[in-house]
Amino acid sequence: MLYSNVTPEQKRVKLRELLASGTVQQFPGAFNPLSARLIEEKGFAGVYISGAVLANDLGLPDIGLTTLTEVATRAGQIARMTDLPSLVDADTGFGEPMNVARTIQELENAGLAGCHIEDQFNPKRCGHLDGKNVVDSDTATKRIRAAADARRDLNFLIMARTDIRATDGIQAAQDRAKALVDAGADAIFPEAMADLSEFQAIRDAVDVPILANMTEFGKSDLFTVDQLQGVGVNMVIYPVTLLRIAMGAAERTLESIKAAGTQEAEVENMLTRARLYELVDYEAYNQFDTGVFNFQVPGVR
Image (cartoon, rainbow, N blue to C red; front, side, top):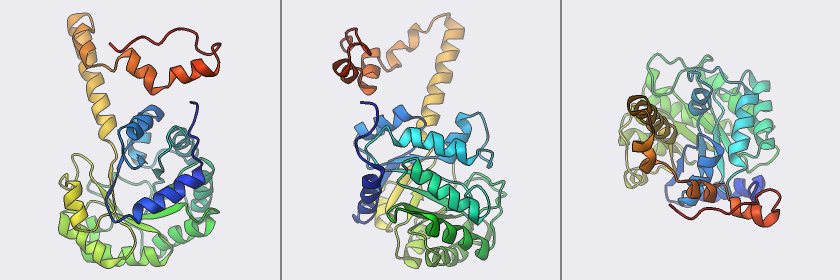
C-alpha cells in the first residue's frame, strides 16, 4: 500500500548483490509507476527507467531536452512503487561536472539505486541512431569522477555508458571503458554493440559488471539471456519495450473505436477492472481506512 517498505539504501545493497551474483539480471523498462509494480509482480530482478521513455512520455524526442528535475521527479515516482532496485538513465549528467554532482545527489534523494551517465555531447542522440558525437576522454572521465565523488551512499551505483564504439570502433570502446572504470565507474554500459563478440571484448577489458541494451529496432540483435550470459554480461535492459507495446495497443484501440464506433472489439484485450484494482492494491486501502475505499472490489472478469 502507498509506497515500498524497502528503503532506498536496502535497494542499493540489493543491486550490488544482483550484479555480483554471476547470472544475468533482467531489468525491463518501466514507463510509469504502475508498470514498475507489474515488473516486480512478474518476478524480474529490477526496474530500468529509460531517458528515452521519460522524454517520449512528455511528447519529446530523446535528444537531451528533459531536465534534471523532470527526470528525478518521475524516476522517484517509479522507484518508490516497487521493492526492486531501480536504475535510471541520467543522460550526460545534465551539465558540467558540478551539475553531474548535483544530479547524483538528487537521484539519491529520489530513492534510485543507481544511474548511468554517458559520454556523448549534449544535445545527445539515442544510442542506436547514427550521427552521434562523443566527448574526449578527459571530459568523459571528469563526469564519472564528479559522480563518484558526489555520492553520499557508497552503494549508489555509478554506471558509465560509452557510445564511442559507433564513432571509433571496438578498440576505442575497450580503452574508454578502462578509463571510465579508473575514474570511478562501478559498472560499464557499452552502447550499440554490433554482436556478441563485442560484448566479450568489453568483458575482457574491464573487471566490473557490464550491461547489455536489448532495445528493439537498434544496432544489436535481440540476444537471449543465455547468449549474454555466455559473454559475461551481468545485466540486460529492455528500455522501451513496455512503452512500445502499450502505445501500439492504444493506437489499435483508437483505430477500432474510430472505425466501429465502439471499443467492444478491444475489450477482451484490456486489463480488467478487477486486475487493475489488484495492481493498485485497492483492498489494502479498504482495510486501512474504509473512508478511502468503501465499495467492493469486483470479482475477476
